[in-house]
Length: 166
Image 1: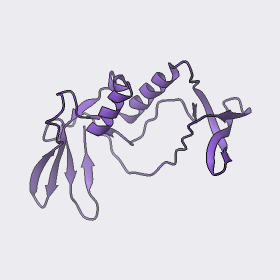
Image 2: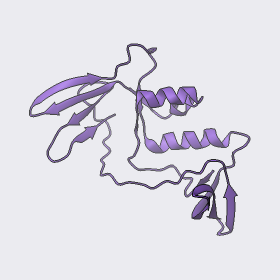
Image 3: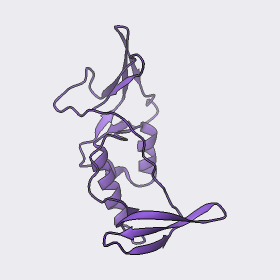
Image 4: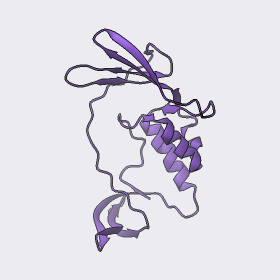
């Protein structure tokens, strides 16, 4: 596993894990990756528009009580996933920068990369994930409670919605 930077990311992206994502973590044996990172249960949203509000809960009636969404600091979650991956006998975690993909018949089979010391190396793997980041404007507030515990808020403003979550 090659990561450009092994430091804990400090950015706003992917802080909300929907209930289906949490169920998938359980199926993969990764549910402990939301432990010890201040992850909070997330049950749905309060929608606000034109001075009116309504609550929308996830349909979780058929699931056990621990099934819900989870919100957390993205960097803490990423670090837990990295730690879990690195604990596997067949995974090596290394800091490096991918310089090019190795493709065969249109299928990515591996990468060429530079490690921390600048050495150019090649790695092959049955799964290659290439991350292309997107952009988002965000604000982190501390000691700020939302109106309904364990719920986010969506303000349907003009021209774009505003999302708030713990």
